[in-house]
Length: 119
Image (cartoon, rainbow, N blue to C red; front, side, top):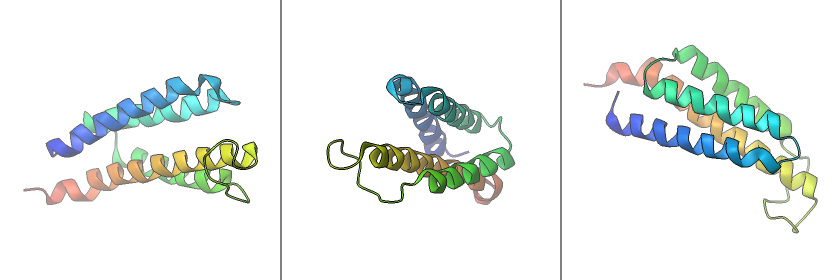
């Protein structure tokens, strides 16, 4: 695994740990703490070459599906006070899941296909 990808995975894992810790004041904290903690564990596992690519791919697809599921009917941005708080909260949660999904899919595809092309 290239060093840059490994460093990215470790930094992303740390960002997920930070996100999990910051969920304590969320209206539904346990679900989001678990989501970010699992994402962090998968990222660290990828960096250490301990997670099969299929786990990363499935988790990435599930995160993207969750992002579409939680996406609000009317997206009003991310800033509190600029729209309905429920729509803003759902928008933030869905974008977080989209980010997780894209990153985990990248890790899974990298491990499954791109790593074999490295020289």
